[in-house]
Image (cartoon, rainbow, N blue to C red; front, side):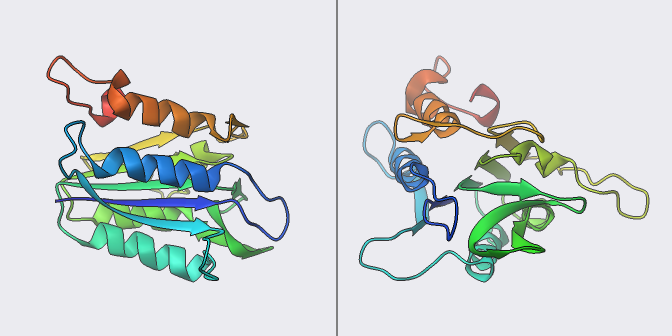
Length: 197
C-alpha cells in the first residue's frame, strides 16, 4: 500500500497565501491514480480554508496526521506540505494556523523523527515552504549529528535561508514536482522515483 498526506494552508491569521490549497489538491490528484486510472496512493488531504468545513490545521492536528501517516507499514509513505515555514535557533517549523511566537507549528525535527522511525519501506517528504532547507540542519543530539535512515528522501522548495515562491496560482516547487510525477521524470519503463524528481 502507498499512503500520502497532502497539506495546504492558505488561511493564516496574518500573511495569508494563495496557492497552497491548490498545491495540496494537485498533489493528491496526481498521486491518487496511475496514468491508466488504476489506484496508486491512498491520499488524505488537510487544507485550510476547507469549504463547508470549519476545521483548522493546528499544531496538534497536523502533528497527529503526520504521526498517523508514518506509523503504518507501507510500500511508500509520502508527506507533502505547502504553507508557511519558519526557523529559529532551535528548529525549523511547518507553520500552522494556530501558530504563536515560540510555538510556530510542527517542528521539522518531529517530522524527521517520525519518518526515521516509520516502518514504511520508502518515505518521501516534499516541503513547499520558506526556509524548508533547514529541515536537514537539525541540532546534534549528544554531539551526534541526526542522520536520515535508508529509504528517506526529502525534497525542499528552498535552501535554509530562502523563501519559496508562488506563481500562477500555486507553489513553483509543487508545480515542478507535479509535472515530474505526471511523466516528466519517468524512466524508460514509465516509472518515477524520488531521485528522478
